[in-house]
Image 1 (cartoon, rainbow, N blue to C red):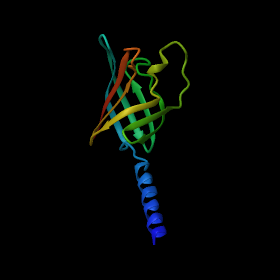
Image 2: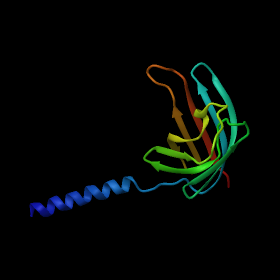
Image 3: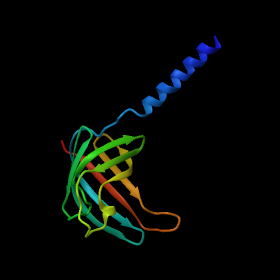
Image 4: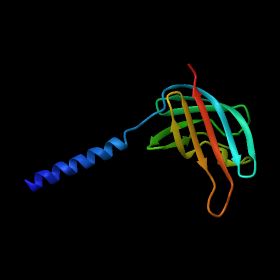
Length: 137
């Protein structure tokens, strides 16, 4: 009997882990909004951006050249983190930290999505990248 209870408990725990890792996605559609790199000592420029999400793929443009550096790629969501893969080739004449790639903190409501990356640390106060986009109807 103890073995059966143990096995059932183990199966329950395994099924819970799978639920946490179910692929979430952003609802397909066109999104418009802004990007801003907030510097510790001042606000950075604000760019108007457009992003398109379809399945787990994204593409985007900005009204400012390489601010941010958008193009296209894939994404995945795990918990409150969105991880962007950027499939484009980039030249070396700009700050590559502006390329939309890597892990960002995700906040999502019905039509609005915000994702941020905090570059501050204990040894350096630098900046936070903030994207805020809203789904077009």
